[in-house]
Length: 455
Image 1 (cartoon, rainbow, N blue to C red):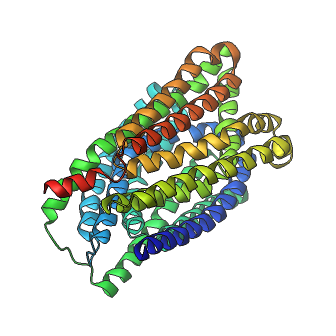
Image 2: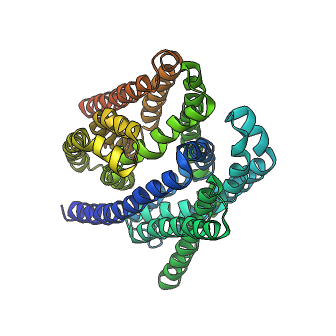
């Protein structure tokens, strides 16, 4: 019981810290989006948003799966009472992540024109892709160090680095804006991408400095077999990374298809990019604002559930799942009510765009299901059932792609919004059913006990 309370208090403290910094970061990002929408316009925002499918795909390949793997193994080592809490997994993850990120960076720098014209269908994205490529090695280092701290359930460094990244990103873009205004030059989407790069550099410098202080204080030396850590981490992160890349590939296809299918509906290229920019750069960030709490919970759920699974603490896992579902639904329903009442006002007053308000009101119904889907996927990963989470998220992405392909050309962007709602309902509902099935079959906190008996 004592160990359980320790896990619970650490989890709550970490969640609150991540939530506080996440809210502050989202508030900064909220005003930043307003600034961008008024500086580079809806079309410029749409061009800027077009590179994010490529960026997310690159990060999922070079960092995201590796960060999750580091977090899991560090949590397991800490659960076993290891003094250095799996620092060898951090170094192994850095080795893999940096190697991949440099390869991906080189590819983007040489193939940016081809990707812009033939993949994104927008030649103006070529320069943005080249600029974005420089952020990848820094994002890789930053992600690995965050994964290490998440595994330790110490969220101060990742939280502060998130704020550092956001402050530097916004400050860089504002500085470019002031210089451009003084020289009488129009601000382009490239300014926002340079802000992204500088933010990643600043966050990495902070994370590396913090890790250096921790290393001096705790003498973080590699204990155990480093080659063994490389092998174990590699075997675990390869399928996880493959899953992330596949999901992000389909999500990227979904995002790239939207402007093209809107043109079939009757928009010209400029209008299609403007609608895409309003949806992804104004309405979606607003709808996802309340998700900061569930995002914090999701980040810490995976190592916490993994540690409880390793200890065969079924009682803790079941209680965590029940509380997660309860709080996600409450937060989601309150968010839905808020956006239903204020969506039009936010669109017209804050973004000065009526269509943004319409999108916010329509998407308000997605809040309970998106909150639940993210946290339940994290629980499935923590239980070692990543294949279930992957399959459900892939099906959700396929549902949205089908809506884009089949319905958007005939009924416009509103049909895509309904597709998003249906896909999140599908993922959340089936994730919950899978977890209930696993619990009923006694497969929660049971696999490790069996392996221990056999060993």
